[in-house]
Image (cartoon, rainbow, N blue to C red):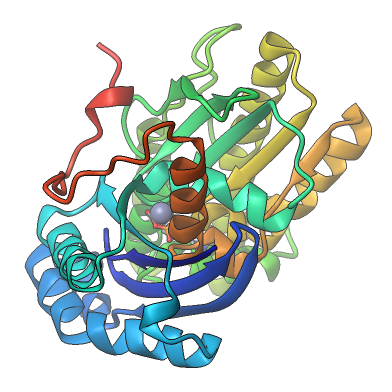
Length: 339
Ligand code: KG4
Ligand code: ZN
């Protein structure tokens, strides 16, 4: 079964062909650069840039995979959550293509897509699974049961971890996106990392909070005064910031694994591309004898292979295979919102 996936929820326009939910035939990702000058994603500019690129990116994905449109079995598209305008561009393109080819259109939740990368990384994956989706828009812990039913265990009460990376990098004048820039700066650290607070939110909580950490970074910068911070010191702030984020992420994974009695864990989303986090996750898994699935870096940040893989599984698991073309895109994800 060959699935074309389309992703346009934020600032990556991506199209991918995935065979049988596990073999990535192509995964074309166009990252919008226009936002760098604004220090964050500008929704209208994102939507316009998706419109300029989406058909070209999809054609490139087909060409790279050597697959003709007529051979597609299914089209999968991100329909939520994300920037409304950006989502609508990819969704409209995918719906038009599906209608013209007479193929089913399967809407895929973007955050669930990050979890489905576990199947791309481990085709022999045995469920259940505890999954941490940690990106610019989300920091959530999920449980995927044997039937691939996903339930929310915990989520951030304020900023997402990637958002804290982006905003802290902006405060330090490092640029956007902040994750890779903070990672690079932290890797050069030679002195004691600055100690920042960890918000564990009580003994049993599986929720997250990163806004306090962001404020702590701001307070630290202000206490040092403008223009006084050396490169060496900046590295120690970045290293301390990363340690504070990663310690919380790993502690919550540990708690979720105990609560669910599940020893297979996965981490997806842009922050999971961080090398220092990957090293810590690996050590944690070895120490605690867990199976830790970490998709390759290109599958961590936004991509359409995860959407194609999700579409394949949703279609296969659907008893009646009835997917409505009239389903639309939406910015929020009501199903997993906690009251
Ligand atoms: O999954 P993603 O591409 O988009 C969303 O769904 O949000 O994640 C983007 C986020 C950004 O906040 C970015 O700064 C962060 O992931 N990120 C990283 C790294 N690469 C990307 N954070 C830490 N270290 C990285 N190497
Ligand atoms: Zn994402």
